Image 1 (tube, rainbow, N blue to C red):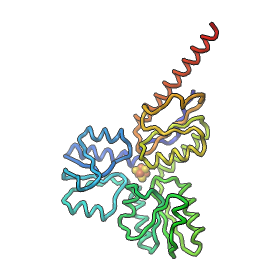
Image 2: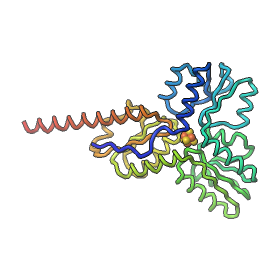
Image 3: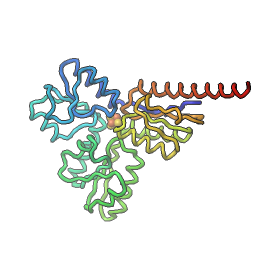
Image 4: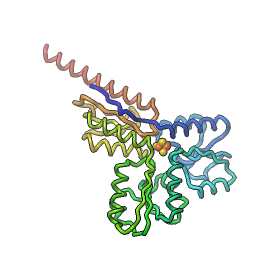
Length: 293
Ligand code: SF4
């Protein structure tokens, strides 16, 4: 059995830099991260081992310094945190900052802002946190529920699949032909690269294994995309989730991973797939030998 890795997979520069920044600051003094720095349990355990605290609410912070995650936050939220006397370290990914600027420009130019993304995702809360009026859409039904505005400005959560975003923008245009609809593409390049590479890989394999945190948006999008090109797609967080029966009869197994998945986790999943394949090949050989006796 062959394992085919997607040409682009795994941790992006934004997540890598945020983890490094957290570890540097943890060496300098007590640090609390506001929310999950990344949606990956393995990375979060490593940070915890360094004594870094995680709080979901600023009211629960017991250290003088807090870190905003790579997902970013709104200016209003930053101001509220600083008003509590906390020092703020920002690990916001530069590509999330680009998305913030796009949203601010749309609002400044009088567009009603529509974000394509997950309403409750921390990045989307950050993108919309400085707006008084906005909408968030993820499915066709959300677009059908929108109200008409003379100018509609659309931007996306950075980890959405661009193909899906474009489809929803087209739907908005068709639904409101009299409105001026402006779209700024804020999907980040690492997400687009991983999506395209996943399509390329999924077309050539019998089974796809996607590695990433259960609550990671871009990992879920990779699963959805691969499922359009391959009937057997499985999402795992670690090598412990790999089930031997998934590999039954597979000649080529494809591997991809979300932007918050560390290289060593991907490596261990790959190794587990290889071991499972070797074990079942051994069983086949034993069974064949037994029938010859
Ligand atoms: S997924 Fe994109 S926006 Fe998010 S941290 Fe990585 S590079 Fe930045």
